[in-house]
Length: 412
Length: 79
Image 1 (cartoon, chains in turn cyan, brown):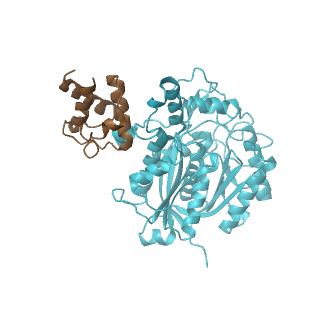
Image 2 (cartoon, one colour):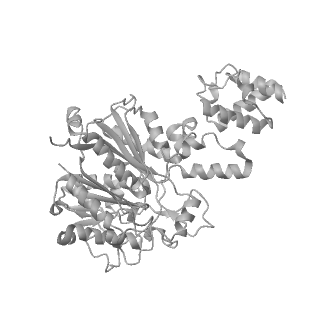
Image 3 (tube, one colour):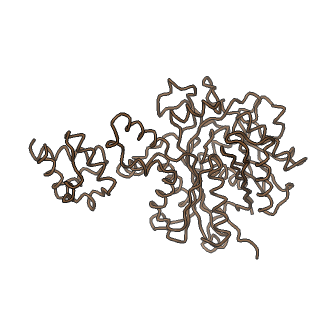
């Protein structure tokens, strides 16, 4: 029996480049950076003073204060992105979606801001003054639950926490759910809003972050010789995924197909990628096999491309191992150069980029790629978007913990 | 403190801290049905009362409180 095909019929996003899909795409293809000095808290004591923050978004205006104040910011962003995706898919958001619709969300660290606030309150005022909403805001599945409540999603739900691979894994697992006939539709995506003084401080301690405080917009430079770390970002991206049959029955527009998914674990080191990207290689191979395509057929790779010295070198090596000579012909780019690292929301955002690239036949660039690195010698689409006929794209996501999630997208 | 004064302070907490629409906050309003304050919200409300009026409220004192008026009367009796 042939597998059921899985399509994407709706997209929604809120991220450092824009608060909807259209603004985001325009900024992506124009090479705009969404990185800037942090505005939401004081950075005087921190070694890194910039990040990719969502801008011009007031949750009180959007949800009303009584609702908004019960949720962590990650919940606000998740509901906003989901509403856009559902409306884009032509789904009535006034009616409950019911038990035949599932939800799978990814996040790296959930409501870490709420955790920090609760600890501060406990230290300063004691246990009896801890916010009674703290647990419901800080738990990693908070966004999944809040989105389900808001839109009445009563089917199976999962929250995946595989660090920076989380929402790639979410989309992959959602694909399997639909393919296996568990449900016809899954609201899948991921959210991260974990840019706090503590997380910036802690990531800086392990030398993972760029410290280019003089030029924040040039700090994230994947595959460039002078890259010095990733840049924290926040955002939420949601895909409405459904069986092809379901989409055609309700005459929904189709962005493209989630054709393949490969997931592996390095089982090597908690932060460093295995030498040569061993786990990444296997994940890419599994995704290609799942999509039943050859290495010759990939037109575009949206790289994990974090701008850390280790990732970009090892990801390049992994791509060469998988694609051999073809590696030098594939167009690759890292859109993290513009958004920063959306962590648990990254895989979903980059799935959106891959799908829009296929639909529009445009590859967004890797900005700030000025100085070539001998260890990174593939085509990374430096600084200027590339117009090209595209049929199949791949998106890589790799997370601390050694988690690898790779997705393959087809236009038709 | 006069009963009316307690009510005005309570109303202020509901509106400013919890984001509840001012017009809904009357003495007769039911906390759960009319003001949409759920079980988690009640804990917040009690904390806000304790801070504002510098009192302590035991859980069993809340057993008979389901309207704004009943809360105001409880607070008035404790100040």
